Length: 157
Image (cartoon, rainbow, N blue to C red):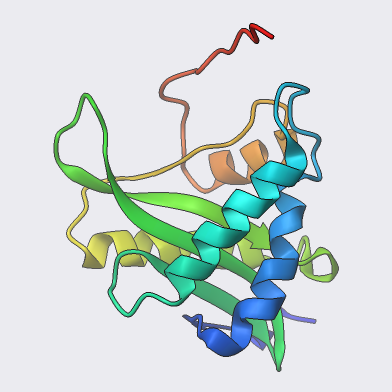
């Protein structure tokens, strides 16, 4: 399968089941033990589906498709950083279906995220990634993302 077999478009209600199923991939890397993976999936699924149903340009969900199959999705919205008071674009979630890994889908979705952010007038695009999700970190670094703030956690329970 070649890269040009993929198409990008805004997600719609017909994509909800496939997107909801893909959200569980967000915790496959094994989140830290102080995180509840099931709760993470529940929250991410709810937020992505609410964004999918939005008619505004912020938030938004885009899908990469291959024929009638969803190869992956990216969920985007605007944020304001505490040190940079101008709004910026944020990749809330990006997920590629297992059977499409390694075929350029993540790169296509990140390129769509960048185009969206520029169209919104944002000067930068952010994303968050768990430290132990090394595969995702390598993909983001190849796409031009760099580290900013390292958030450290000390569980108190």
